[in-house]
Each structure stands twice: as C-alpha cells, then as structure tokens.
Length: 298
Image (cartoon, rainbow, N blue to C red; front, side, top):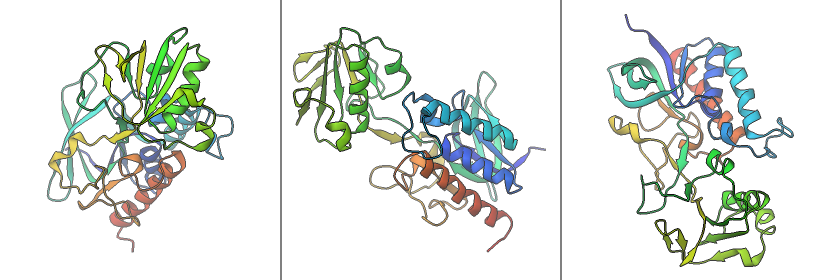
C-alpha cells in the first residue's frame, strides 16, 4: 500500500525546512522534496555575509544554509533531493504529487496536505526567456561568483539591492569598467551611496544580448538582475489564486491558499519582506495550521 504522508513540502529552503522540522517535532510525518542537491534555497548559494539575521553573526548565506540542513537532519525529516515535481493532482481526501527523482523512473507520492515552498527564480531578459547567450548571466549566485571579471567591462541590469551588491563584487574582482543600468533605483541608500554617480545610468534601457551591448555600448559581460518570479510552473492541476504579480495568495493567519489543504510559504507567496527569518516564521505558521487541521484542534 502506498504511504500517505501528513504533508508533502515542495522546496527545502528556509521556509520549507522550518515547516518540516516543526511538523516533525509536532508528531506529524512530513516529506520534504528538494529539486537541487542541497537544503537552504537561495541562501545555500549566497556567499555574502548575512548581516540581517541576528542569530547568525558573521555567517555567509552558505553557512546559514548548512545550519538549516543540520536541523533538518537532527529532526529526522525524510528529505528527497534532486526531486523535480512535475504535476499535482487532487484526490477526494489527498494529493498526488508526481515527480522525477534523479535518474529514477517518474513516481508519485500521496499526502493529506500540500505545502508550496518552491521559492523564486531570477527574471530573464524580456523577450529572451529560455535563451542563453555567451557573456550574459541571469540572476545572482554561483555563476557570477565563479566568473573571472579581471580587466573586463560589465553591465549590471536592475535597480534593486542585487545589482548594487554585485557591482561591488565585480569591482573587487578586478572589473575594469562596471555600469549599473536601472530604469528606477529601488536599492537601499547605503548601497546606492557606494556607487559613483558616473557608474549609475538611469532611464530606459535597450539590451542586445547577441552583440552584448546595452544602450549601444559593448560589454564583456551583461548581468541580468531584474528580480524574481515564483516557481509555480507545476501548479496547473490546482486552482490556486495568484496576486497581480503572479505570487501565490494566502490567508495571513494560516498560510492556506485558495485551494483547501494547500499552503504556501516563503518567497513563492511573498507574504512578508523576503528574508531568512520571515521565511522560517512562515514555515512555523503553516506547520501549526496543518497540525490543527490533522488533529482537529481549534
């Protein structure tokens, strides 16, 4: 007989991991599914110091993710890595989650409740979605960290914190020229103040990834840092309401979505300012709501 899990949690970032640990300690049986090879979400690929989380002084995002992973293991949470969810179907009293786990044959797991903790992925160049170009890097993270920028010219596209933080990174890595192109500047003042006015170009931006030019100027590298979009491609089988930006709408008290017994936490729902502490708090809220549901607590 196929096992019936109390909850299947899709995504092992801070939100999903927190939810799984709490459910386990509350006496329930969750399954944590992660599409990559590690726990921690975006934090697991962030080499910058986490100056915001008061319980993690002087630690990088990678180190914070390692701590989260240790807690998941200590709690005894069943965790499946390299598990890509393909689709989700609803049964009369449960959910069937169909997935591809590594090189294994496609399979399905069944659960009483479903938690969406799939986070976000970088927004691509408009009109060039799904395409790859030499010299163009989409989103912050490992690819930027592993690139040698010494002596090169770099264009950074975006007006948020990531563009300004990565400006400092590429300059430290020896970039000869670095320019930020932003339609509007949304980054924190402390970041903006550290960028010379001559290196910040605001207004309309025209990008040609084939010729590697921005507003007609050629660059060795173009870094696309246009923010994030939710990872919800597999949700077509469920009727889940989204907000105007495409993120999953939830009840603020329980994290439940418009679909019964489906919860959404962390950056996929954008319920609060996105960061590690708020994501973990979301996981707690969802876990307590699921416990109340499955144990008939009021």
